[in-house]
Image (cartoon, rainbow, N blue to C red; front, side):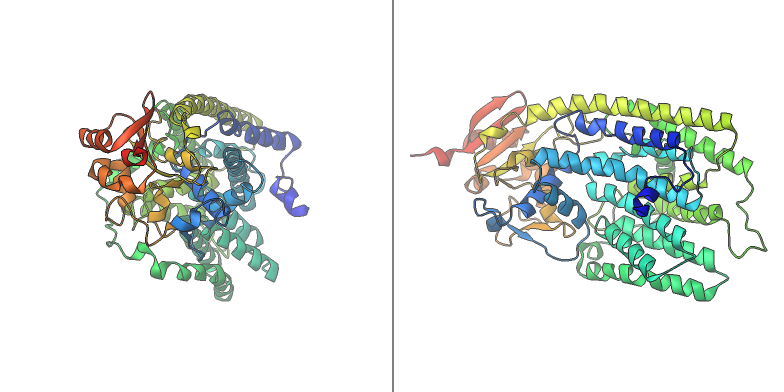
Length: 523
């Protein structure tokens, strides 16, 4: 019970009013998840569908084993699929996703608040700064695994710091379990968690070599997990990443404009600038107010702000020099930017004056309230578009093979392609097979097509072509392998000609059309 009281702020020198404010803000941030039927993300429908494949894999009324294999190995990204599959045991599919999203919305601020107050107890004001980062661009892209890994990252750092002076078998086991949870959430956060902990250990114990060596050894069990995946991974089979500063101006501009907070609508840039300006102001104020960034020569170690400044600078350097992708994984700079921005909160020095706390807290609460209202508004708008996309879901019978084609992937989603993977909705709860199941193309996801599966194109990453260059597909030649073609938007002339010649339009509603191969209806 003491662990949960700890997690719920009572050991962080928080008053009841502070705890109440935090709990209310967490509750308010659940509104965007529940205000709409379909929560608009890009990859979310795919994760939900693949979790259902795992959940129903042995269901004899479905044909999943005929099309899919499950990689029962120590892959990253397992936690998202495991949690969603577990929730599908209790809730209907759409509701299960909402419960999963709610768990993230709660877990994210709690983990960061735990981290901040583990480093320095009583961080009442700066904790409010975490809420605008909850609905970040990567989360709304539907990168659920990475979204979950971020709180694991901060939970790991906070847990080590809190227990670094009294290591025991229990704390070593729990620390490794947290790191293992980070690994099974996402490989990038796992890697940066290990790097951050190694840097912390070196900076904290550089004058005490035995303790330094002991703490490093404590990380060996969790760090060995990567050896189970990387040697055979596609991450090592691609080209060598191009490292350089050629994108320095662009990346700095994106970081300072807080582009990771802009997702559903361009108007979010206003709030992003407010968050960026507030963060820069608080960091500048901390440098001006407190001169503890230099180590005390008589101290056994550096100050905690110096240590975390080193980590922030290391991550910032990686953000600036690393490419957009390494192997098949993309959005690398955005992921690092997310970690840097949230980690920098630990550098902020709070003022003890009541007026300072009142003004800054009020401002941060106002930003959070505006953000929730804005997110809820855009969620309702995009939900209407997704309802239109899913208007013919009940038309699809059980165990049908679906080929979705979209020519308007974004809708009004601005930076989020809400229709890119929305075809997965048509394969939920009916045993449907989605030919455009992109997760099957990547070895860090558990579901893959069987070796004998006949893809639309003889290319390794044929799903990418299917998504973005569908005119390359021989739709007439592939008609024998599908039961339905779902079309969203106005097709290119080549695709339109193939559909007219080899398929029959059975339903039309606005931008949505459903087709069946003509040979299925012949005598």
